[in-house]
Image (tube, rainbow, N blue to C red; front, side, top):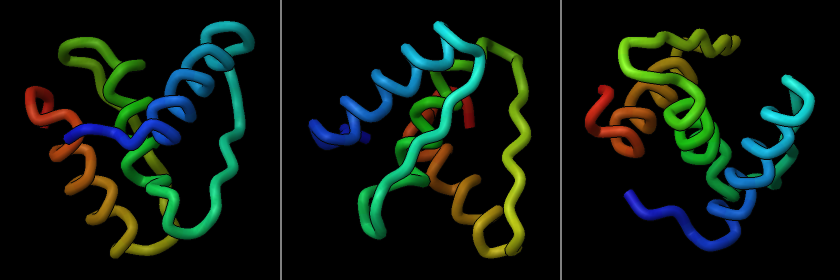
Length: 77
């Protein structure tokens, strides 16, 4: 899946912040593709065989996160 230019910029800045400070907070409006961007950041932060824990307060969000991660990172799904 190809990221839109603004999503790619968001992912690149998020990764830069994570590597510089070990934490970051990304804020984006409704419809910006936050789940897609989270999947891209998570896919790049985790290596082969690594796992990540994404907490969500609804089962629907957990299913959505899993499905989007598989689309953004098909080799790791």
